[in-house]
Structure formats: structure tokens, C-alpha cells
Image 1 (cartoon, one colour):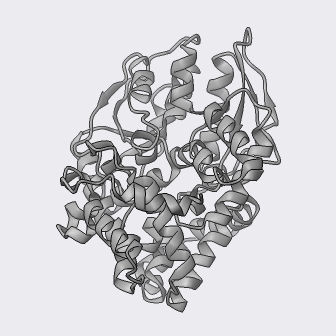
Image 2 (cartoon, rainbow, N blue to C red):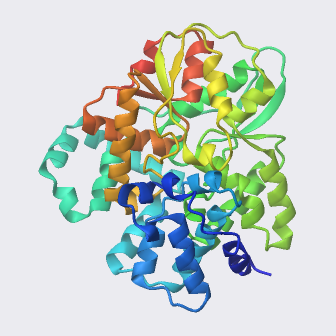
Length: 428
């Protein structure tokens, strides 16, 4: 039985109770039934019953962020995350998108999952940012006229400095407690290399030998969550081969960790890979999840900062990792953590969503920025590169000078006694 055969059974789990409605970002924005999980499930059922995929149906599926807040809120255990992935794969197989849309999607998927291509982009992008051309282009609005998606891509790019290259092995400080392999990621590795460096240092300070395979590539998250199944499977198989000998694989990007934990479902139809995929999924841990399991050893030094913690959807809803990052932050002396209103409403990043649906993503980003700003925090802590770029862009629009850092960077500053400037200097 193929994964697609699971669709009718999964659809039958929904009792149309409506508990998902107030948790769905697009329903919150627009109040339209067909832009809620319940409405989309109704459209999925229509297609299973023989209704061809129309452009309007696809628009409603495309408008879904795949944030999985509805999965958390559902009392019936509906696997909406699996439903939307299967449906998107069906859309990619059956639906002919307009040419301009096809070109944009190919551009994104030929670029972002490939580290070397992103690395080649870094130099020209740094020059563009430092030369002043960035300000001129944004003021002119020329990119908006060319393509809202291209304009969104340009706005989201973070300020780029020099990218430190990590060695293949970072030795544990003191007695070794564990040996872990580390996924460096595509966007994380090239746009946020400091996060990877901080992750490796924190793990080493906590007594871990950190192995960083040079041969690693994309985990397949962007492809998986966009219905590009065959592409996602190819990335997954390569990732399994790269990390198969590791006792634990530590991931510091929420979307990547979620995808790797889904390998067991992604490759379930492939007998030669199913067992290997299941084993790798079972050994994959988010950084915060792993550090809490390991327990603290290194001394935490004071970090007098007021911070707000953002729940990345693929960390909180997909992986169920909520308390662990907060526990790590609570262990840092003098760090005050404030909660953000509407924590379960997505910031609008959602992998490639802010590129393909920039208007809706912008509304959600602005909503999140208002709630972050209302905390009065001087630092936002987030555990996903897409969220960091999305919220930073929205905070800039609002004129809010709030720094953004990954949980690893906050821990790194505390463990090394770097002080508050190490994390609050990176203003949005």
C-alpha cells in the first residue's frame, strides 16, 4: 500500500468539530472556512471523491502554512500534517501551475537546498548590502514590480558577515560525556554560521565530542513540506547515509529536525530504507531537547538580559519541544524570560511560505512583531533560521530595535561569560 492510499483513512479521522479554527493562522487572518484545516480537509475529501484539482482548490492548499498548530489543538488526533503533505504531493503531480509561478519555485528549490550555491551567493550579497545598493533598491520598489516573491527574498536576507568554517571534529572540554553528530543545515549554515559555531561550542563545553561531517547536504525539509516527495526522499537517503553511524544527531534548526524525525514516514514505502530511516529518526534530537536530556555540567554565568522566547512551529507543534528551551534559559542567572502573546500563531515564515505567499506572510510577521515588541524585551530568542529572518524583517518595519539570537548563542554567551553585549548587539 502506498502512502497516498492512507489519505482516505486519515481524512475520516476529522469530526469537523472546529477546535482547530482559532489556532489556524490563515483562518485568524481571514475568517474563511476554506482557509481553515477543517475547510481544507473538506476540499481534500472532494478530491478523493473524484473532484479534479482546480486552481481555486490549490490556492487554499497553498495558503496553508503547514504550521501544525491544528494538530496540537485537535481532540480527535487528526494527522493534518500528514494530510497536507500528501495533498501537496498530489498537487505537484497533477496541477499545472502558471509559468511565472513554476519559474519562481524552481529558482527557490534549485538554490536553497544546496550549500555550495548559497555559498556562491554570499559574496555578491555581502557586497550588495555593504555598498548601499540595498537601501537604494528598497526605496525604489523596483523588486516589488518585478516579483513580490523576489522582493520578499531580498528583504529577508540577514546582514552577512564572514562565515567561520567549522572543523570536522570539536573535542569535548573535560571528561567526555557523549559523542554527537551535528547537522549544519543549508540556510543555517550559510546565513547563520554563528549559530552553528555556538552550537558546537556549547556541546563541547557540556562534555560532548562533536562530529561535523563535511559530506552532509540538505535534509530535505523544504522539499518535504512543499510536496516535492521524490526530491525529499533523495535528500533523506543521502542524510541517512551520512549520519547513520552516529549515536545521536543534534539539530539546531526546527524545520530540519522535524523533517528528519519524519523520515520514518517519508521512506516507509521503501523496504531497503524504511528500517534505516526509522533508526535515524529515533536518534535525532533538537539541541534543546538533547541538552536537557544530558543535563547541565558547565557553569552558567550571569547574563542580565530581558528576553522573549519564540516557539518555532516545527519545534513546538511538530516535535513537541516546548519546555526544554525555556528550562535552558531559566538556568542562566539574571536572564529574565517573558512570554509572547499568541505563541501558537505562526510568524509567517513556514519554510518557503514567506517567499511564495509574501502578502499573508507579511501580515503574520507584523502580528508577531507587535506581540514581541509588547513584551518590552531587548532580545528575542528563536530556534529556527526562517523565524529569525521573518521576525527580524517585521521588527525592522515596525522600527523596533530588538536583538535576535538562537538559544545556542544565548547559552554560549553565558557559558563563556561574554556578557549581555554578546547577544543584544545583533539588533533587528
